[in-house]
Length: 590
Image (cartoon, rainbow, N blue to C red; front, side):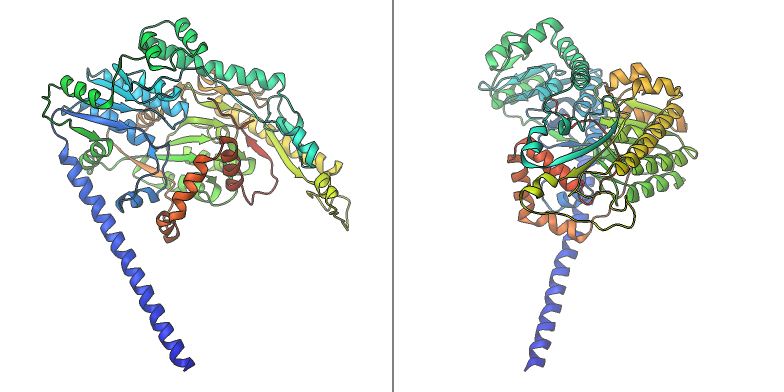
């Protein structure tokens, strides 16, 4: 009887596995077929008198997860939009005679300031062709309005408004919490402005930190304010007065002060667009998705062999493998070496969107890029943030591009070591040590760090800081004294970094790609992305899980401080206390 039970259980298990395998195989084939058919049909579906529809209702990322294409092929919704796809589609629409203009929806734009600036510049370039850009929103957030301000006409829902309030930054301080509950962060640092550690040492902001954050957001607002004022044909002084008194929050006031052109419902807006295109009331507005334009371009470039590799360095720099949202040494060194060896890749563009992280991994990546630069041109494009370790890996490029609103610099080093002795003493837990040598324990969260350990860690930090400065001096052709004046952990905007020599040019990813093509002496090329992270079955099943949607909803409902804490905790798990080259604070500019 036991034999029969085992036999039938084995047969049932085998049949179940075959059934599930068949379903997965069918889905894979169907997904591939769907992608191919979609590309073929999209290339031919653009009709005359069409409008490119840019509905920016998903987070915009430099690099999207590799699993997203498969996810979309299964009929599931995409979770993000890739920046280069939007910029390329806008550029292609500019020269496509069938496309007469752009319809923009950027109500609640989820993107960094530098990414938003890149999109805005692309729309400005599109307008140079003589075609129109029209924007509609139920309500504009400040960032969404900054992007939409480039439009020829801006329309808002009768119950909407425009958020225009200036910029602010909020930093949380934990010193009183540490004292109250017995949790302490032991801090070792180098850099006057390296204030990532400041919240653990004080319950208020230092003057040095206040100075650098104030300078940073003032520089950002200088770009934002001047560009909005120019687009809306008002003075910067008038715009500042609107922001100071929140005069545009109500839609009627927004119209009165000149930030929008018309108050209307979406249905009426659609009719206005149709009139602009010379369509009758019965005609249907022909809206084209950006993916339709990209599909046609892919078909056009099939015969082009030369490539420019874009290596996306996105997220914190950590020990370990790495993926699309975390920069680990294994995946990224392999990506750099593969791009350097490929005969079809004629140049490399390193797109950096990172606050930094591990000093060791930053130097390993720097070395891999240094070797790659010996074989072909290396151009850096800085995104929203390329600071500390993010700047470390960028500083040796042939040319560095930053957006005026990039946050960069932060040339400084620190280490943080958690200590819970006060808490464990309160609850009756005690640690005892037996040692062969006085510094054998090294680090223990249950005891204050010893003078010997602190001395050793400080020596390590000084060594990393000196190496960091040397890398910058060599890469930027500056003296060590000049680097020291720009260092100390100070953070700069891209505009400031251009003025002080930390970057070469102001421009987005497109400008960096064009510069790489010039250095490589090629005119026609395709783009290829790295790292190429494989999607395994665990990723596929995770996409299908109902818990994935629940997790997303929970994260979106949490206050931003808790969301940031969870993100930092999960992305840096298993990271032992190590020396960090990282941006000096978690900066949320709103």
